[in-house]
Image (cartoon, rainbow over all chains, first blue to last red; front, side, top):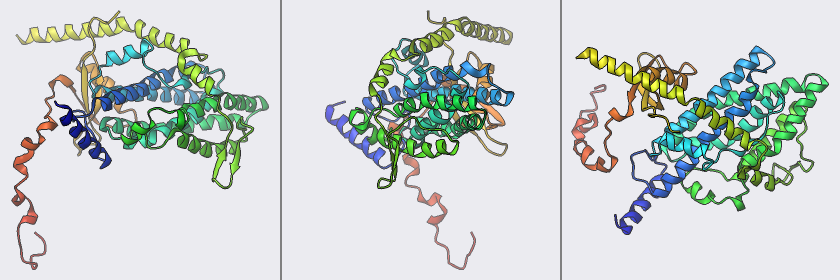
Length: 318
Length: 96
């Protein structure tokens, strides 16, 4: 194809997206669109998969059967979300093996929030409430993104996600109304998860390199700063309601803006964690790669069994 | 080390309730059809979304190419007489 032809195809492509048409797997698309989507969608899938680890840590130690079945169901949902997203990414021609390989070799990133440790049961509450809360804010606009398979996966994910946040908030509510120690535990979890949750919505707009292109492709419908403000405005009253204090002395309602002003985010910490120096980066990768390697004989055995059963069937047919 | 052989990809179709058609809802990897059915149950029907599942190995699906949509769907484009609105009837005929 000549450069002019590609230019005109690209123009038509951008026009389709501007008209809110969806792009489907076999449609022509610019190489950059394909690559960007493979990158973002697979990172999203990896985040769901690695996201199971901090919470899986507490399943056996949940304080009651009610909490245990809920947490188990939530972690199973994360696995499901990872699978919807891998499946959607594969429609762009990336194989599952490639995607796993990129995660396991550290070539692909996942959300930096999962590189923090889950120290107490209250962390299950804080993660559901804050981390899933921030994720929902990020994901709801993606239900309208331009790539059909991604949008459809996000619709499923968002439908399931609201139970996650509610179960987390319920844990916090219960602890906040409990004994003095339980309340302290809840406050401590909020103190540790608040700032990482704000960072989770991404670098500030002036530092975010992909925003303009992503907005055009509807991979992003609001900027990081807008999403962060939305998250803060929605979460502060929830903390007030259960009598917990947001660990930010600069947090103050701004009548004029109709929003909360908030303090400086420690972006050095964010970039350290992104670069692999967070408290749990090594641990998470070790757990993930270890699970994959230990499962290898099971995958091979299943394949050998399937082939044997197929051969037997063919022999009987002769 | 890489596995001997990777699990193939399957396309999953779910009927949400009797009376409705099976609808494509995504794909997954499984060693064989039985495993694909069980995995599909866990991945796509965790909240009673289905009463019946079809699994088809992805390689068995032949898809039309959107680049040929012009020629492929052209025959339907100039046949307005296939639609009821093409026919002129007197206003007195109320329901037809």
